[in-house]
Image 1 (cartoon, rainbow, N blue to C red):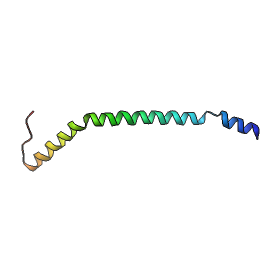
Image 2 (tube, rainbow, N blue to C red):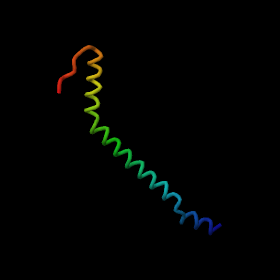
Image 3 (spheres, one colour):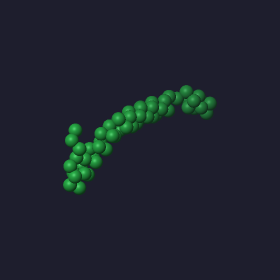
Image 4 (cartoon, rainbow, N blue to C red):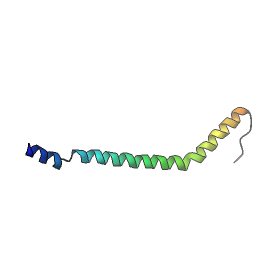
Length: 61
């Protein structure tokens, strides 16, 4: 029983899950940053499409 407890405390199985969690968090931060950076441009294009569907000319760039 004592040996089982020692192996449980010294085990490194949880370490792999923590690494996956850190990678997932990093990917989430990168995706959020990209969406914030590109968000205004995408919003502008959607507004141009909406205005085009309403029959209004989009602003010329």
